[in-house]
Image 1 (tube, helix red, strand yellow):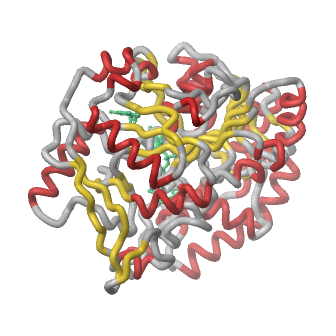
Image 2 (spheres, protein in one colour; image 1 turned 30 degrees about the vertical axis):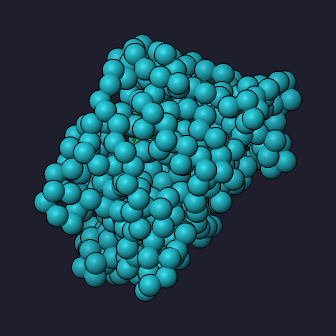
Length: 455
Ligand code: GDP
Ligand code: IMO
Ligand code: MG
C-alpha cells in the first residue's frame, strides 16, 4: 500500500505534520523531489522538529529514503542527522545512489542569478539553496550524483569537467571576480574533492546509499507500506505551477514514481492526499490574487493571521504573504494530482475572525475562470470572485481534537463541506493545531477498508 502526501498550494501547507501522523502506519517514508529548500515541521508532545532533508517519518523511527528525484546537500543532510541525534533520535536515512548532489557552487550561482534577475524585476525569491542550478546540471548531463562521491577519482573527474564552466559563468557572464566571493573555494576542484569524498566515505561506512528502485520493490513485496512525502506545493511545480515563479522540480504526485523508481501501476493502487492550508501563504515572488494587502485593514488581518499561524519561512525565516483560500488554484491541483482525499490544516488560525472568505473563481477581462490562467501576466490581472463564509468562534481546539470531527463548530464544517463538493474528494483529516494530537482524523488512508459512502 502506498500513500502520497502532496502540497496543494504554494508549499508550507503542514505536510510534515501529516507525514508524521500517518508515518506511524508506514514502514518507509520516501522523499521523491526537492532538497533542503523544504522545511517540514513535526511537533510531538511540545517538542518541535524542523526537517529540511531527513524525511518526516524519522521522528517515528521509520526508514527515511531520499529518492533519486531529490537533490541532496550532504552538508545539510549530515548536520540534520547530527542534530536529530542531539534531540535524542536515531534516524535511519537512506539516500539513492542516483540522487544528484548540491555542491557549494550551486548555492553561489543561485544567489548570483537571483541578484542579476532583481535588476529586471524577474527575481523568483528562491530559498538560495542551489536547487535550480543543481536540477539544471542534472538535465544538462553535467551533475554529480551520490554514487560519484564514493569514488574519489570519479568525483575529481566530474568536477574537472564542470568547474571551468562554472568559473566562466561567474566571471564572464555575471562579471563577478571569484576573489570577491565569500566562498571562492566553492570553485576549487581539490577543496571540493577533499570535502565531498569525505561525505562519500561517511555514506559508505554507514551503508546509507541504496539502489532506490530495487530497495523499494523488495520492501514492498515483503509487505511494507510506503509513504511518499511531497515537498513544496502543486502551484510551484515546474510543469504545472506558476512558471517561472516555481521551484525546479515536480512536487505533484506523478513525480513520486519517477523520483523513486517505484512502479506506476503499484503506486496507482494507493492514495494521493492533498494537503490544504485553510488560507493561503506564499514565500517568494509571484501572483497571489487573494492576497490580503490592498488596504491597511487587510494588511492588519494578514498580520494577525501571520502571527497566529507562525507564517515565517522554516528555511529562510522570511515573513509569508497571506491570502484567502483560492479554489481555482485547488481545482487545478486536484486535477493534476488526482486527489483521493484532502486534509485541511490551520482551521484554528481563522477562528474568531470577523470575516472568512474564499475565492470561488476569478474574473479576467469580464470572463469567469474556474482555474488559473497559464501565464503569470494573465494571473496577475485576475480579480478573485469572493464568497463569504460565516466565521467560526475561537474554541478549545485541544478539546475538540480529542472529541473528533463532529465536535467542530458548525461553520467550520460548512467550510469543509464546500471544499469537498468543489474538489470532489473527502476530507480525511482536519488540523486544529501543530501537535500530532491536534489533527482530527476521519479516514486513515492506510486503512484500505474505508468507503466514502460511510462518511
Ligand atoms: P510543510 O512545509 O508543509 O511541512 O509546513 P511547514 O512546517 O513549513 O509549516 C506549517 C507550520 O504550521 C508549522 O509550524 C506547523 O507546525 C504548523 N501547523 C501544521 N498544521 C497546523 C494546524 O492545523 N494548525 C496550526 N495552528 N499550525 C499548524
Ligand atoms: P515546503 O516543502 C514554500 C519557493 C521559494 C521560491 C520558489 C523557488 O516547506 O513546503 P527554490 O529555492 O526551490 O528554487 O525556490 O519556491 N519554495 C517554497 N515555498 N515551501 C517550500 O517547501 C518551498 N520550497 C521552495 O520561496 O518562491
Ligand atoms: Mg515548509
